[in-house]
Length: 237
Ligand code: ADP
Ligand code: MG
Image (cartoon, rainbow, N blue to C red):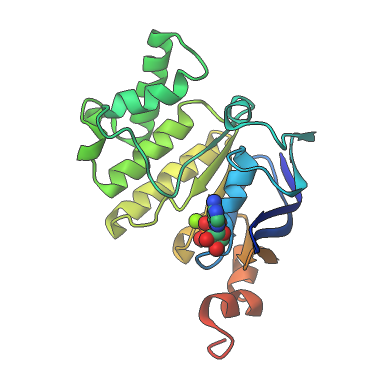
């Protein structure tokens, strides 16, 4: 469904993404790992049109989406969550989800129905009238998911959805992502928690200092020497 080729993004002298290539197969869950600063979020910015690559291409269903803006790419069926949550704090939970949907469809009734369906899916229906600033971190992550899902994407990019979340909320988030997969969504997941990764991902791409250093099954990645070294340093490995 998605093919990234030779994707490169520089910020001044820093190469945040260095000739990265991989594919995400339709219906699968692809994990992306790497220590802080490896270039994971930048990769999502490039795929979703929030940043433009210096080199390389992004293809969706075989067609280049490079250089299209975030709204165009979203309309083609690609949605994302943000690592740094930025809900509209003084809007209700329901309004936060509706804002995203109404960028596609200005019909208020349909937008509300879609928002309520998404909130029901993530288990936040009872919070729909609460202001977003009144939510816990775990609930905000669910709001982010509902916001991304509300536009009914085919490809969903999740940036550390379990990060900073109470341990008790994690099984619920895993179950949610499983359900999205069962509904036919293709998912790319940036994830630090190995347990979450092992239970969800079919394949994993590992990044370090902007470059892809390994790709394979979660089991092979967990045992990969370069991956272990990138996290823990050569002496530990
Ligand atoms: P990760 O998500 O893997 O932690 P990022 O993609 O956020 O990593 O960042 C990769 C590198 O690129 C980091 O060194 C970061 O400081 C840098 N970087 C990211 N975005 C920008 C930007 N807009 N301007 C300058 N440097 C950036
Ligand atoms: Mg990041």
